[in-house]
Image (cartoon, rainbow, N blue to C red):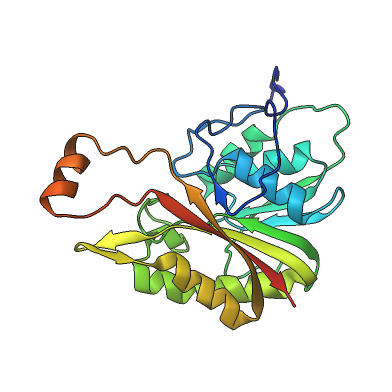
Length: 250
């Protein structure tokens, strides 16, 4: 596979976020980043988290690696990282995204096909930072026939499976280290389903201590056309934010 030629290696005028409301109108287009993987998080999020909660040479885990954003940022910031996903399409994309040479790069990338609920291939307390963005139940389905894909689960089933995800995250993470997870909510029959806070409570019940709740603004929720009409007709607001929870293993 031919190495990609990169002309822009980092964001312009980057500053570390200093408060609990994050907003990135320009989602980020440096290195190999793009928005072609539906629902992938902005590289600004991954960069902020990696810089705040890990150091060079640390071993990071993203067990819902999806489009590979966290892998690319870990490489650029000299972190080692394990990227896990059940979807071969996602893993192929990840391999494509990390196919570049970067002067001074020391971080290693390990891509593994696996299930976030069963990380048996990751030893106990071997991870310095968990940094991940799971699917939001079945809001976006990422495959057609992969039984282990949590994006096929309805909300109640998804939350039940996230208990296993939280348990594995806790097991592999070193003591006093951090786990960051981005989650959103959904609406069913006109009523908000607070999946994000349910996931937060699941991680707390596992033993994690909540360090931060960050509100992340979404920029693809303009009230136009169909959604504007229905928002007024059925009297509901468009969900335009997600929650980024940062936990610490005590």
